Image 1 (cartoon, rainbow over the protein chains, first blue to last red):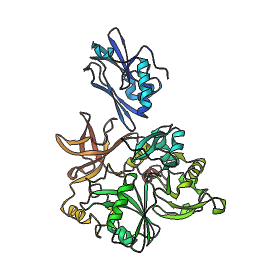
Image 2: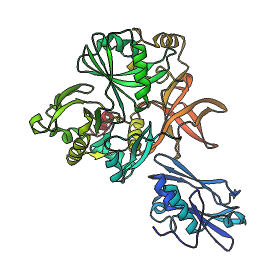
Image 3: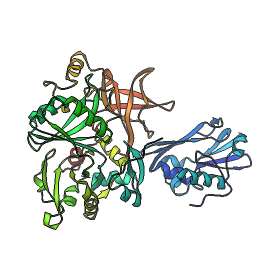
Image 4: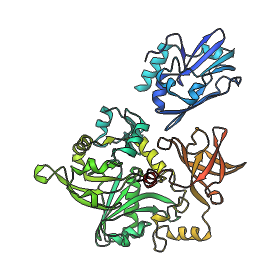
Length: 129
Length: 375
């Protein structure tokens, strides 16, 4: 699966893009692969205020739960609600239709500290060795 | 430094065929294959799953006092087990808590097979040797020389029938026998034990035979339609069937009375731990194991605390999403006063409460399924 070059990544396998103060947050294909069969996504409500590093979304797989952390502080402006009923788009298109939330950023310092695609893929490779 | 993981004769096959392997009780074992855990659970419930259980331990008590020795260590009344029958039994410590759980196979009065957990390979071996020293028996640990495979699911009989000279239709549940696997000896066949047992809640068989033949039998069973299943689906199947797993529902801090395992004990006989268990039975069992139905789709996981209002009344021992029932299920150890069907409680899931209702175990039974289908 091609990972987008214009996104930034985290060691905990989130991806994010930032445009005009609005951050789109998702998880990578690697995170999805590691979780296994995903059965439920517990999404937050729009309007919720987030602190950077806060657990924002829970992704339940058959055998484990994955938590998605907010890379920045801000307010949730949009939620991909359809995923709550059917997680399939997250699995088939994690960098597109499978986005999780959009956050109106109040402090974007966290975004700057995320890593670029090369660094993320280096991290995945070194974790496998 | 971490010790190197042990492999079964099939580990290389698992890795070469899409399995994701994880450390389990010192072995490198497949947690799932390429199609994923939900697909594997459905295969066990509707078809025939094939399990590599070579990591599990097998002890044989041999000698004139095999029954007396087994009855001293095991909670079940071994003297009363019919020849060629199998019973669930616990190894308890003096305080009544659980050292391991086992299946006891009585071949004859001088040959008792004990199938133990992988985690008990060394512990149980040492326990038996220490506590049966005064009996005229030999403890034979055959774990490394005997392969163990399981077939589980409604099509297990079909998959196995052509490979073994045993009349599977007449082999009853929790009975075992011997037969030739893979044909007559002149054709490369060999002796095997075949039991009608398992750990998924489905009909099925377990096979015990020389470990050098593991790959051959594995390949033949796959060709006969059996589908490899990893430990992830195995754990879900046993949770759906309400079966205890050592280290979760039972351990050195939980007694078999608390874990509702009365069927595996005879408290009218003496065995290590019996005095403590009789005392607990008479004085009151403080906690009991229950099933939880869960409101919503979030899954209570092992270790989560259970609450009645502000009062912490127990913990989750196993929790998973059930692909068979399409809902989260959990097993919990709770204060006895709450162990009644219909009692409403809450589980703390990472700081947020989830409503649960006590329901009877098992969550899933193949007999119930058949009735529901009119069969």
